[in-house]
Amino acid sequence: MVVERPAFTIGIEEEYLLVDPESRDLLRDPPDRLMKECEEVLGPQVGHEFLKAQVEVGTKVSATVAEARRDLVLLRRGLRDVAERNGIAYIAASTHPFADWADQQITEKARYRMLAQDLQAVARRLVICGMHVHVGIEDPEMRLDLMNQVTYFLPHILALSTSSPFWHGVETGLKSYRMSVFYSLPRTGAPEQFSSWGEYQRHVDALVGAGLIEDATRLWWDIRPSARYPTIEVRIADISTRVDDGVTVAALFLSLLGMLFRRRLENQRWRSYSRMLVSENTWRAQRYGVEESLADFGKGTLVPFAELTDEIIELVRPDAVAFGCLAEVEHARDLVRDGTSADRQIIAYRTAIDAGASEDEALRAVVDHLIADTLVGLD
Image 1 (cartoon, rainbow, N blue to C red):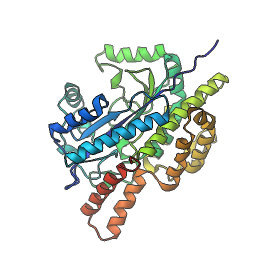
Image 2: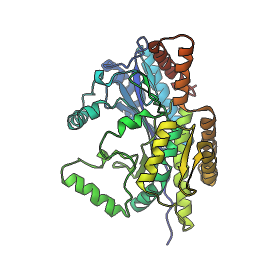
Image 3: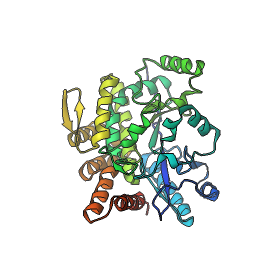
C-alpha cells in the first residue's frame, strides 16, 4: 500500500507580555486602541489572550520554515511598531520577572470568563506565555501515530526553549518555571498513548459527554492533535525570546516528524516509552534547561544535553535538508553553547546584583534586557 506523504506545513503561534517601560511591570489594563491598532496592522493574525497584559500572534500556514520565519518577523515588527507608538513595550518571555498574578485583569471574553470561573485561582495564576507549533499531517491515524512517537522528544524541545527562570520576584532555580504553573491545570503533561484515532476520539467523547469539557481544545497536553486544524500541535515549549531561537525549536519539531515518517516508510518506528519516563526528562528540562543532562532510556543512563543535541541533529539531518531548514536545526548547538533566554536572564540579574543593584533594580534590569532581546533578529 502506498503511504501518502503528509503536507508537513508549519505554523507558529506566540504569546507575549505587554510591559510599562517606566515601571517595567506588566501593563494590567492596556488602552483599547492598542488592540485596534494591532488588528489594523496585523489583521486576523493577532488576538487577545487570557490576560489583558497578553497578546497572541500566529503565522499563516507556511510551506517552509523560512516562510514561517518571515511571517513571524513581520508580526513581531508590527507589534513592536504599534507598541512603541503607544508608549508600551512587549517581551517574549514565558514569565515576567516580578509581576504579581493577583494584580492581573482577565480579558473580557466569554471563553476566558468561563475558564476563570471553572478553574478559579489555578487559572488566574496563568501569567505565562508559550509558543505552539503546528505541523500539517492530514491523515488522523498517521497524526496520532507520529504524535505517540515524537512525545519522547518533548523534553528536548522544552530544554532548548526555556525562558522563565523568575516568578514573583524570585529566582526560582528552574529554567522553565512556566511549566510548574501550567501543570496545575487539569489535562496537562504528556498525553496518553492511544492505539488509534478511534480510541482517542472515544476518550474525548467520554469527557464531552459527561460535561467535563466542551471540546478537545480543553485538552492542554504538551502535544495534541489540534482540535481546529489537521495538525500535530506541540505546546510544551516556552516562548523563545529571540525569533531565531524559536524558529530553531519549530524547525527541529518539523524535522523530528519528518524523521519519524521516513522511518515509517522503512518499516521502522521509534520505541515507545511510558509517560512516567518522559515526564522524568521533562522535569530535568524544566530544572536545568540545556546545561545538564537528560536520560537516554535506550542506553539507560544520563547523557549531557550537548551530546544529545548532536545526536538528534544527525538523526534528523536528511529530513532537515529535505525541508530546507538544516541551518535552523543546527542553531540548536549555539543554544546549548551560549544558553537560552533563561540563562541570559539569569546573567543579566546576577550582573546587576554584582554591580551593586538592589533586588528590585536587578529584576527591572532583567525586564530591560528582555525588551531589547525580544527585538534581536527583527531588523
